[in-house]
Length: 357
Image (cartoon, rainbow, N blue to C red; front, side, top):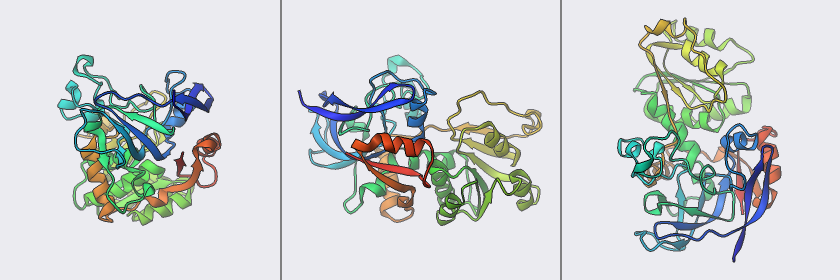
C-alpha cells in the first residue's frame, strides 16, 4: 500500500505528521497531489479542541495541486492538470444547495439541511495538509488554474478570498457606500478588497497591528483605525457625521467586535458577520434599537464549487486584486508543527503560511 505524509489531529493540543495510505478514489472523485496548502484559523480552533473533529483526521481545506488520478465519471479534466478546489466542496444535491446555498450542502438530499454541511475537507473527510487529498464530486469542485498564475497567487481562492468577498457581497454594498471592516486578518483583508470592488467610496478598517492596517490601505482602505489608540465607535460616528456606516463587516468572531459593528451601523444598514464564534453572542438593546432600527444581521460561510473558484481566479488573473502579500511565511510539510506554533501564536507578523509538501 502506497503511503503519504499527512498532518493528523490526535487530540486537543496535538496535530502531528503521520504516515497514512494514499486515498483510493471512486468514479466521481479525483486524487490531487498537493503542491501548496496553508493553515487556517479554523484549523487552530480544531487544534485547541474548540471545534470537534474525529481523531486521526487529516486537517486542512485550502488545496492547490495537480491531478494525479481522475475518476471515470469525471469529464473535462485530465491527469497532470493544475487545479484548485474550494474549501467548501458541495455535490449540489442537497435541498440547501439547490436553494442557492451551496456552502450548506449536507452531502446529499437525504441529509436535509445541515449548517456547514458543505465543509468536508478537514472536517468530515481527510483534508489538504498532506501530500495527497481525495477531492469528492470532482466534476463540481475542480477548477483549472490559468496558465501563468503561481500557487501563491491563487492560494487564497479556496477559502480566505471566497469568504472575505462573501462578507462584502452579503453586506449589500452599493456604489458610494461607507463601509467599516473590523479586524484585518486574512479574511478581513479580503473583505476590505471585496468592499472596494463592490464600489464602496470610503472604507474604514480596524485592527491593532499597524502592519496589517498598512496592507489594508494597499487593498483599498481609506481610513485605518488602531483600536488601542482611539475609541473606534466614537471615531466612526464622527467620520460619518453621526449618520453611521452603510455596512459593517465583522471578521474576528468576538463579542466586542460584533457589538462595535452593530453600534456604528446606520438605521437600515447591514452587519455582515464572518467571524467564527466560540461563545454565545449578546445583542445589546440600545445598539439593536430595541428591534426597531431596520438593521440586518447576516452570516456567510465560504462559497465553494468550480464556478466560484473560476470567478475568483478571474479577478486574480485580471489583476483586479493581488493577495500575495497575505502569504508571509513558507514551510515544508515536514515542519508543519513549527508552522502551527507560529500561526497559532501569531508571531513574526504572520498572516498566512504556505505549506509545501
